[in-house]
Amino acid sequence: MTTFPIAVPPPGDAPGIATRHPDEHRPWPHKPRTWPRALVIAAVICALTAWSAIAIQFDPATLIRNAHNASRTLVQLFQPDYTFIPDTAGALLETVQMAVIGTAVSVALALPISFLASRVTNPSTVVLGVARFIMNVIRSIPDLLYAAVFVTVIGTGAISGVFALVLFDLGIMVKLISEALDGLDRGGQEAALASGATWLKADRIAMLPEVAPSYISQTIYVFELNIRASTVIGLVGAGGLGMLIDKVRTFYQYHYLSTIILEVLVIILALELLSSASRKRLLI
Amino acid sequence: MSQAQQAADIAFDHVGVTYPNGFVGLDDITLRIGGGEMVAVVGLSGAGKSTLVRTINGLVPISSGQITVGDVGLKGLRGKGLRTVRSEIGMIFQSFNLAKRTTVINNVLMGRLYHTPAWRALLAAWKRDDVELAMQALERVEIVHKAYAKASELSGGQQQRVAIARSLAQRPRVILADEPTASLDPPTSHVVMRDLQRINADLGITVVVNLHFLDLARRYGQRLLGLREGRLVFDGPGADADEGVFESIYGRSLTAEDMLPGHQQAAV
Ligand SMILES: Nc1ncnc2c1ncn2[C@@H]1O[C@H](COP(=O)(O)OP(=O)(O)OP(=O)(O)O)[C@@H](O)[C@H]1O
Ligand SMILES: [Mg+2]
Image (cartoon, rainbow over all chains, first blue to last red; front, side, top):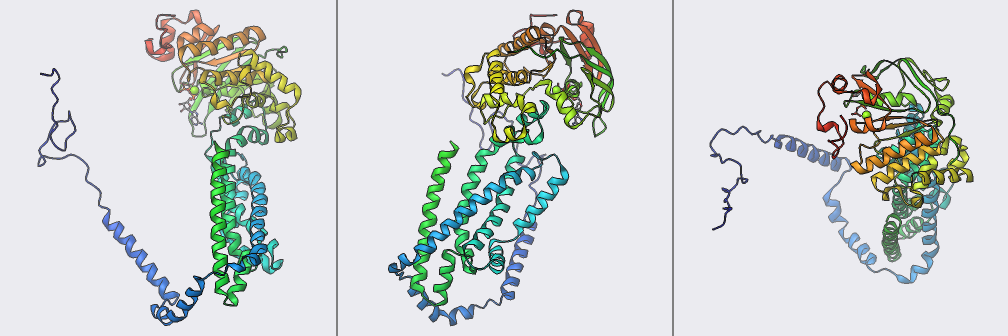
């Protein structure tokens, strides 16, 4: 006989807790009713979707009417013409170059601006407010719109694309880095300030090393974004593969189009593998 | 390490601190700490110990009265004037306050920032003399072999000694310590307190240290300041602080919880 009899807890009860008949008075809180809220949200989403579909004159009948056309295009798309690859080399290279330059310039600019845009590293509420306002405006404009504006002002080509990428990245980068700063331990900074350092020196010496891992990681992230973005902004004339896509599309060269799409796919996959590998190596 | 500058007198003259939310942190404190003294501040949690030491380097601004460090009045002091006073006052924190992702030596060099031009700080191009000074400071707390280790890789006691080295690198006249042993185990607490004691004795630096445990306070503070609800209720040698005095500070009689664990037998 064992000296410690093992009590079998009644089903549904934790051991050691007094059992209670289910019909007894239960003082526990009731599960709050959530379904009315869920219903309202679902209704709103459905209404918005329907309204949007009407607004853009979405008509399933058009899909069917164009089915013949669409199938021909699709057949062509599924037959990429690989002999076209050498002709895309220039544009492909330009896309990568745009992404590299855009990333380099934007992350360099983003670092000091992030320190201005974090309440943790910037004691001046006025400067903080101004920096945040400007960055909010910059971030609210989509990359394609930047590209369109620069193409109009500077002209078609990679330079416009780079400008568009820099502004687009800057918005993202400053938001991410200043938020990383906001969440940092401020001990070192407090000690530096207590020893008579200015905010500039304290931020540089005590805060920069702490934010460095996030900075590196976000730089890689922004580079990945740029490869994608630099393809798209080309569509409005801002250089790179996008411009080539626009050209072959205009001439209905769908064999070529699918070749380019495949290339973009491969290059993005390759770069993502590369960047996730380097992220691991840099951060550990 | 070269001689510290002459230790400074610290004088509180009817000092009051009212926090922005209206809470009175310090109430009419008048006291004088002579150059080279080692003073322990005790009191319940919330009594105003941190507030008191933080007024000495202006981390907490005073609302009324005046504090003079050396011959500089702190009331309303800002900018360069405040930084100059702070450069002569080292501070040690309960949670060490190191930049954890950088090296030990960089953390110690932080204590030289006041004397480092902005361009040098931005490039982290430290002066050779300052690196020398920082190494000597690390040597004094017996941790110089860790100079190029990452701060986060050190134990708590080692991190606190790095913090002490950082304050020494300032070549301060005063060192303030806000519960420097609260995150440490009892043996390590003694190591850190002995470091502070040696700094006080060998370099003649004035040391003001907040302590939670009474036995540590009596053992290491030549002089004890007792705070209760923002007021100074005791000021005298540790030896004079008997049961009655403790009751006036703590509002209750002494228990084992007021002692560093493992030292209940010691003191009182
Ligand atoms: N920034 C602040 N704003 C408002 N009240 C504050 C602020 N800082 C401290 N206080 C209050 O002032 C009182 C004294 O705080 P202080 O930190 O000096 O206490 P302490 O003696 O150091 O306590 P502990 O042993 O817990 O560190 C506390 O009641 C605290 O809530
Ligand atoms: Mg405190």
